[in-house]
Image (cartoon, rainbow, N blue to C red; front, side):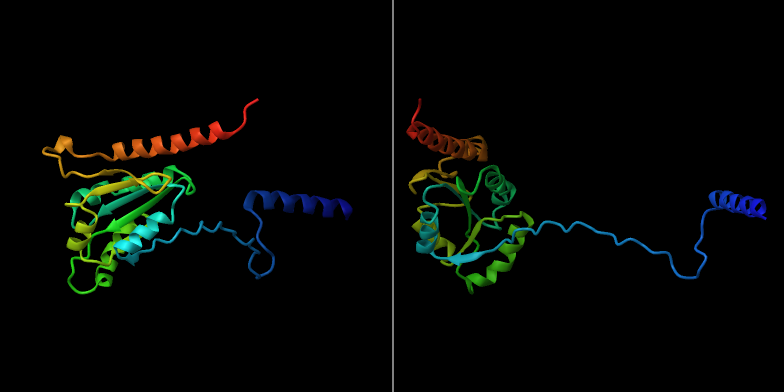
Length: 207
């Protein structure tokens, strides 16, 4: 009997290996819970509406950092084409060294500034512009005069003391080759950041 039982058991095990095991009962097989990693929460893209003085206060609030402010409009093809460069600058530096601001000139004085916000915000979200985004609350013609600017695109770079280091624009450009490039902006930002690092290193005592 023991030999027959053992032989039967071996036969059953062999068949199980060949044919696969099935649960004896009708109850469904137990499944281990599948754990999926939650994606990192994306930073939100926001848009605030400010007048000329409010924009100045925003720039001043970043004193101690290099500030890069891109003046643009959704109606300006060159602005749209080059906007990704501002996002690149934002990603290239820690937020305690460089602050980026986008300033939209989309409000032309018709209706309310907030009516332009959905279109501007849609583009900013597509660009993942997770920094300070501003829609001018004064009509563009007024804002141009206050900034002494003829047209966008233009990029304002402020040093760590809150002073305007350089404004890049195409007011004096007579040909395409004379227009400013974002590489020039990036080079100036790198220079200002490096100067601050060098000054900081020079203040530390050396043995």
